[in-house]
Length: 506
Ligand SMILES: Nc1ncnc2c1ncn2[C@@H]1O[C@H](COP(=O)(O)OP(=O)(O)OP(=O)(O)O)[C@@H](O)[C@H]1O
Image (cartoon, rainbow, N blue to C red; front, top):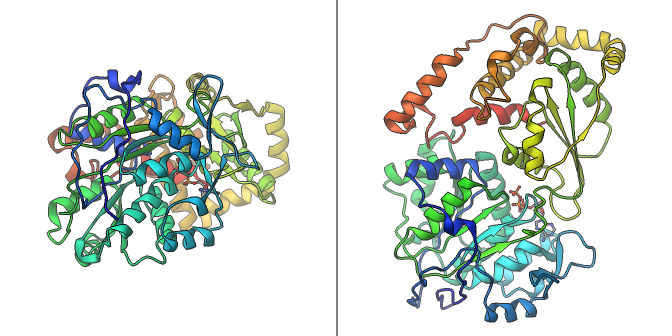
């Protein structure tokens, strides 16, 4: 296929991104990539290059022009009363559109893989982004968590490589940058399924794994590379066999479930700074007008429980729900902010008509977090756990729980160690919390916190919160923290996110 630059144009927009000052240092970019669900696809070799300068003042969220509107209509899109483009909902409602994968102009190799994945209809973000990406546009996409963004950028990426007859010896043609290892692994596994009939190669480089074996893999030629930012930078700097020469004329895609200041700064950096950018940038916002960060099938609740009772309530809760088929996300520790909350709960109710439940544990002094969640359009139902209820649970589970605690604290070495690690991680994450007015480590009663991890007494763990926090700050100043595991080479190091996530999932 003769690849050409995107010809879609974006009009000057009212997008707040455009009004923002230029982004800051490189470090802020890494922070952003790490913190947000940003995925960046870089396209390699382009045959039949065309020159189309982006007009001054082109906005990121510009309404799609007339030509595009016609195409949208063809693709089954309609305008709602406010004149916004909307896709006709698929038969079953939900997030699917009427558009079929079989209608896409894609290779049989990809089509076959999609059929085997049992997908028939495209989701809205897929229906709106894929045609634009196949036409070489840069796209900034915003759609809530679990809405199918992964396929939205992977299908065009794979198709572009396939159409360019990309070979392992051409090196890397697509880089997908994911903010966390977990997301990178998840994205890699979707790409693996999608590419199973293709000859192009796939791999990933993520922190915490053997760099040498990754380097060997890169030397063999990884056409689609899924990466976390720090490890990618390490390879860019030190792996001489990493062939990324083809990544010159770049097509950039940035997808996020949340629109925050950091995403906007990153968008400015990515889409505006590069003088050589010759592509049109199109903003695709799904459900922008509705501003519902989480999906409808999600039941969200919280309960307020003092530290020393949390273990009992968690225990009772898990006992109660373990028979059920439903997916639960339990946040036993508080999220950093609404964005963090959305990402956590996004792991249930995924895909079309997904249903699930999320429960947030809060200490009485953490209630203020609800105001921030409310401001982000997230409302939670309170599950009241009264003193009376706690007493009832206590008498009901007294025997079992004492046994469990005995087991954790006394007998099982590994459970004991992981309980200690959870306790330590909780405190480290707490101490590095950004909302200090709500999460003040000095207000915590450590013995009660220890009880919430199953300990009757304070466990012995090395914990030097003050000095480690100031050490981290100093190191960050000196060299961005790279050599000390808190910079880009450790995407989890900052703010204890790794520890936090370790104990957030059930
Ligand atoms: N067209 C489709 N039809 C049915 N299910 C789909 C379709 N596309 C994706 N899914 C399913 O929806 C779920 C969510 O998809 P995906 O992980 O791509 O969402 P996302 O928007 O990237 O979420 P997040 O922002 O949390 O990363 C997955 O389980 C995926 O298998």
